[in-house]
Image 1: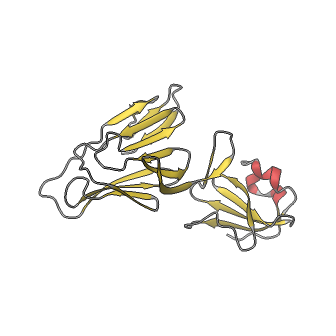
Image 2: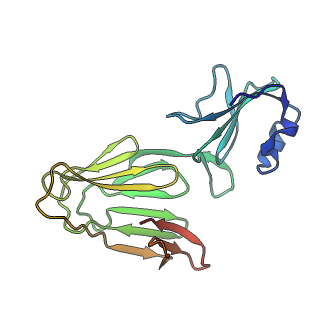
Image 3: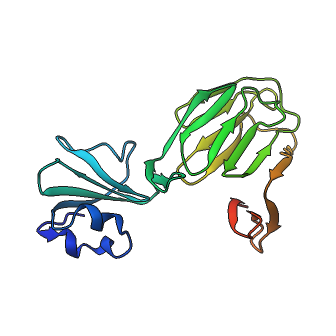
Amino acid sequence: VGVGASWCRSSWWLEDCPVWGTWCEGRRLLRLTTTVGADPLTPPDGMELLALAQDRAVFGTPGEPGYVARVFEEPVAFQDGQGSWQPIDTTVVSEGDGLSNGAGEVDVDFATVADADALVTLTDGDASLSFSAQGAQDVPAVADGNSVVYEDAFGDDADLVYTVTSTELKEVVRIESVPVSAPTYRFPLELEGLSPSVRPSGAIVLEDGAGEEVLRVPV
């Protein structure tokens, strides 16, 4: 989508995202784009990131009136404890005795071995969910970008793979060959500050003490 000769004062997003009103008052919109890519917050040549919100960003050159705006299909930023918008980083990195996502609304921590008591822990403020993989082998975690792989976690040719995105944690048991019988995998949960309930769709919703949804396990 390309838009020219528009003034920030009349841009559609000012109504639902007040952050822009404090930054681009009276500035000229050079280009508005919908962006999907590996590095959505990379500035255009010669520009800097000047303003950020959950699914949109503004780039420009300090001291010059023009700016470029991007709108994203998925969140690219989250609000930290002080209410400031920070870029989401789904890259899995070593942290302490385990692995963690770079930055996001929910902290995702991975154990270094598949048979750990807390294989994965998701933390949002004072609430957390952790789970183990019942019957998993003592195999190491290997981080690759935004994914963690426990190769042969359930024996030969059955890997356990986790992928961190800006909105969810995806879990896949990757089976290299067709098993003789359908396997069953169990992941016992431990909750802190959360209460589970089952929706008509079959999804498990985890709510805090105020009844607010914190996490959801889809069908």
